[in-house]
View 1: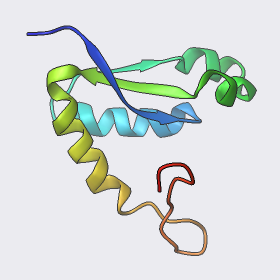
View 2 (view 1 turned 45 degrees about the horizontal axis):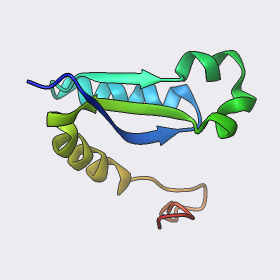
View 3 (view 1 turned 120 degrees about the vertical axis):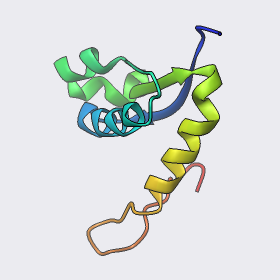
Length: 89
């Protein structure tokens, strides 16, 4: 068993990351948040340091990404349109 973590998602605010962390942990996936305390202390640095990194063990990465993909299909903006990342679509 490897103890290496892989970043599978990044979030601007810790509340988003905490919700996803709880969902993944409910599936038995160990989750580590990186830079969450820094951003909680000063939210304005979130973009500068790349946001809060959600990391899982390498062997759980595929399962975690599948769970994230099922959640993202429900991400809607205030007008009910699907939210798409401007960088990766």
